[in-house]
Length: 299
Ligand SMILES: [Zn+2]
Image 1 (cartoon, rainbow, N blue to C red):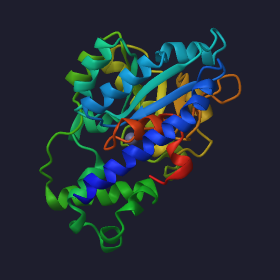
Image 2 (tube, rainbow, N blue to C red; image 1 turned 90 degrees about the horizontal axis):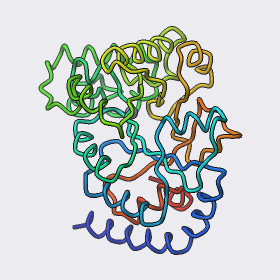
Image 3 (cartoon, rainbow, N blue to C red; image 1 turned 120 degrees about the horizontal axis):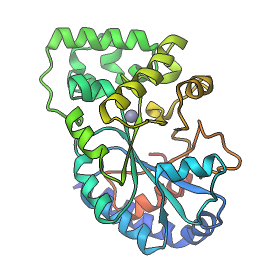
Image 4 (cartoon, protein in one colour; image 1 turned 45 degrees about the vertical axis):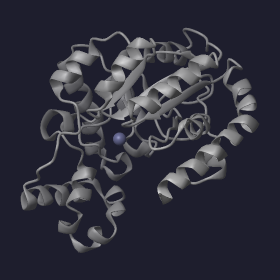
């Protein structure tokens, strides 16, 4: 009940903010200077379709990764009202999103953490959450610490947890066969989201290289297409990734810095993106997709 009331209030506040601020944001988004990059994780089909319908109705233009790369390289100009839709991780439910993208002819980029789809079928943080009581004390009491500590240490904790509990997890990630299938759909581009969904600033230089390179190689081998886009897990970067991206043949990388992407100014290996809110209604999501919500509220 409490949740329902909160959701309702958020919705009303969302529409008020849309009415007040959206005309200004729309002018900015249609100035021909910016690309509005948006990311989802595991949205329901209903909220995703609502967002797409609303953006279409308002005249926004959905562009593909290929077009973003061309613009980034200065080979083509920004189409006013350009929207680039991306998904992080490789959730099983993304398979239900793909037909919607096809139906509305909306290009989407799905960034894959390869180990989860190749081996485990789940993501390390859901495992940690499910078996939180079995974690060492300091992490049991503050599970968010796992996102902040040294990557090797985190891997050790997760591997020990796996040994201890022999996890029984429902599959939450797509598998290789499904990945190969969706990669053939014209609206879908596949990008890398590392191998182990490691937080890049927590990695040593060797691990960072491996995360960027091995994930790319694996994906390319599976889908038999070049993979040149990357998404930083949790949006976190340390600024030392660029030479590795260039050396490995990446064209762009996306963060979760909440602002518009300005191709003539911004570094293509640190592209900002607006987040969405999968448990909220349309109005909150509109506010999030254009950075309005975050100016007033946290989370
Ligand atoms: Zn992620």
